[in-house]
Amino acid sequence: MDNAKFSEKSQIDFVKKTFIESADVQINTAASCLTDIISAAKLMTKSLRRGNKILLCGNGGSAADCQHMATELLSQIDRDLDRPGLAAIALTADTTFITGYSNDFEYSGVFERQVNALGSEGDVLVAISTSGESANILKAVEAASEKNISTIGLTGESGKLKSLVDLSIEIPSNNIQFIQESHIVTEHVICMLIEKYLFSE
Image 1 (tube, one colour):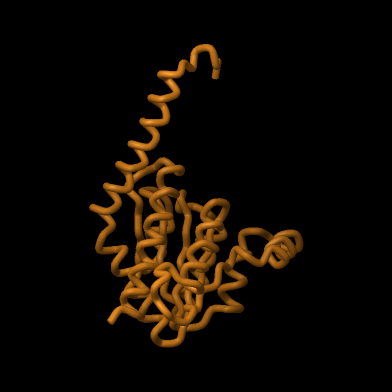
Image 2 (image 1 turned 30 degrees about the vertical axis):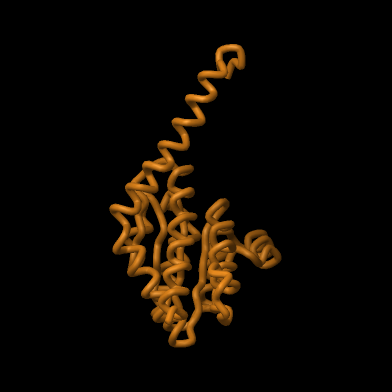
């Protein structure tokens, strides 16, 4: 972009427009995904109450989301609560395994392999994919289903993921950036709901 043509007013308009478009997607998500978000939190709570665990997988920014969400569960969001950690594992965090397995075999199997080795019947797999088309995510969901592990998908309007999972939270957008931003809010809300279901008097 020619900086000479990108005037100060154009810059201000660009920033405002981006924030407003992102906020609009989040508002639309609150309207269209409300029941699915609550259902996801209840499904995860039920699994945790049974002594099972939450597994999470995603790529790139969604991999960071997995580690963020696992941290919120294992640590806590509400600082006023005195609660134990909740069993959550981000399958994105073991770089030694991920790089080793990808180098020796194939990247498309990195999450499937971990689901088969670490997952148990009654667990929940949270699969995050803004495109809904990531091969390693789809294979992980299929492996989870074979082990009677419930599956929750966080995705956008498109892709195969939503048709493979037990419960799909579909952000009403095809813009990857805005989908991911709404995913973060959704993940926080789910974690807060889980805390309320398990620990509120």
